[in-house]
Length: 340
Ligand code: ATP
Ligand code: MG
Ligand code: FE
Image 1 (tube, rainbow, N blue to C red):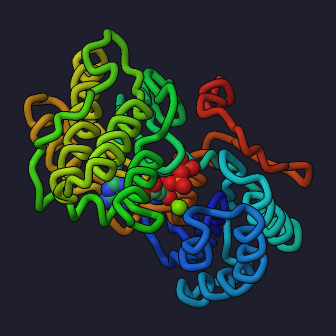
Image 2 (cartoon, protein in one colour):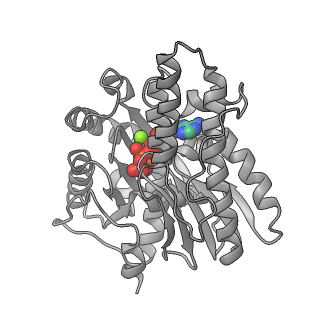
Image 3 (cartoon, rainbow, N blue to C red):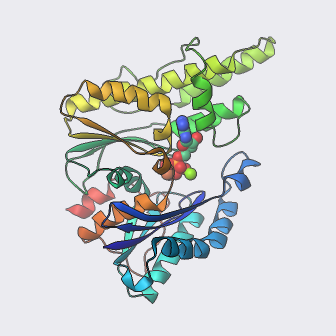
C-alpha cells in the first residue's frame, strides 16, 4: 500500500510517500518561513504563490526519493482543511490532478487528524487513545474510542497555544515562529512572574491563553514605561510554566475521566521541551497509559502525517472526487460523523 500525500494548509509545501500507513519512504517539506518573517506572520497570498511554485518539484522529489512511480501508488491523500483557503486549494488541486490522471482514489484528510496520526509513524496507535493537539491554530483534547473516531472534549476559547507563543515572542523581539526560541530562553530562566493560569481550576477541559498573553504584554510594557529592565529568560520561563501547567493539569484530569491506553502529544507546540518533560512525569502516574511523543521532525506541518491518516481513512472507505473543495473552517469531529 503506497499513499502519495499532500499538505499545503499553511506555510509548508509538503509531499510524501507512505508505505502501509506507517513507514516514511519520503517526506519533502519546502518551508516558506523566510518569505513571511519580514511581515511577522504568514501572509496568505504569499503562501499560495509559494505553494504553486513549489508543489510540482515536491511531487517529483517525493517520488524520486521513495523510488516509486505513479503506477505503483494505491491512493492520493490531501489536507482539505482547516487552514488558509488559498493555500489548501493548491494541494487539493494538485492531488485531484494526480488522482484523475493516474486513476487513483482520492482521500480527503483533516489536518488535525494528520497531526495526531503522525504518532503511528513511530508506533501503532492503541485505542482508546487521547490526543493533546497543540499547534499554531489549535489547542484541543481529543478522545478517540476507536480508530477514525474523534471526540473533542476540550478546546481553546480564544488563542491557540502556538499563537500565544508567537505573540509574546514578538514582544521579546523574536521573529515568527517564536515557539522554539522562547522554549530555549525559558530553560535559562525561572518562573518569577507567576502569570495567571486561566481556567486551570475549572471543571472542564477547555483552555484560554489570551489573558496570559495580555498579562505578559502588560508586564513588559509597564517595565518599559518605568525604564525597568526585566529578565527575558525569566519572562519566557514564567510564560512557558503557565502554559505547561494548564496543558498538563487539564490533560491529567482528562486521563482520569477517560482512561486510555495512549496519550498522544501532537502539533507544532508538541516540540516544546518543557511540555514534553512535564507530560512524561504526568503520564507516568497512569499505570495503564503510555505516552506517545510525536518525534520533533514530525511535530510541524508535513505530508507524512497526512499519508498516515490518509491510509487509515482509505481503509474506512473515505473518498473524495473531482468536486472536493478546500474547507478552511473544517470542524474536527466531521470524522466521527463520517464513521457512522
Ligand atoms: P494548525 O495545525 O492549528 O492548523 P499550524 O499548522 O500553523 O496550525 P503547526 O505548524 O502545527 O501550526 O505549529 C506551528 C506552531 O508551533 C507555531 O506557533 C510555533 O511557534 C509553534 N512551535 C514550534 N516549536 C515550538 C516549541 N518548541 N515550543 C512552543 N511552540 C513551538
Ligand atoms: Mg506551519
Ligand atoms: Fe499544523
